[in-house]
Image 1 (cartoon, rainbow, N blue to C red):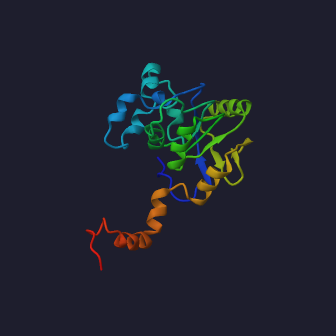
Image 2 (cartoon, one colour):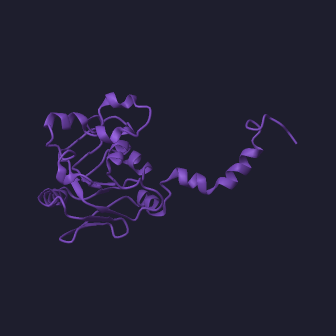
Image 3 (cartoon, rainbow, N blue to C red):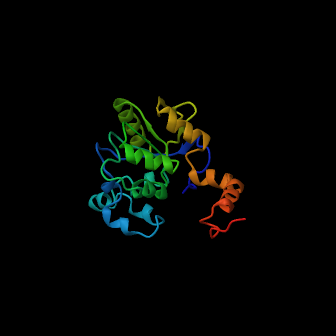
Length: 204
């Protein structure tokens, strides 16, 4: 499993897997009973838990051919429903580093962006062709190129899109609020020393 995203994200490379269907909501991605967890660490094992149980080993997230995939190919309105951040957390901790689909629910998209997971879009007909290519050749290597706005493999290449604002955040690394804070540590420390409610309201 690859490391968690950090800094500038310009490319995501690896194999892919497909979850087909319209309007796949966050309750399917991570069922509500797993929201009681104290941390997100174990959520990767529970992604699509109910769907996987129902399909008894034939779900894409269980199929041996798709283990280790880092790019998820979906259809329309993926991540709809509740606003739970556990959904992209579960995907990320399973190993997903990018999602490509027809469209995404707005809050799910924002939660993915906050984790450094690009959610790129393409036309429905093209997504279906990409899904077919992934299913027919699970071992094929793909590269999602945020600089060229393309999803490519040695055999094919498709244009993908992302709004300029989120695209710039990913390319520049500004999506990573924690890293931005750490990079300004000296300025933040100086500011904290000036705040009376942190320093016992002591005055010079």
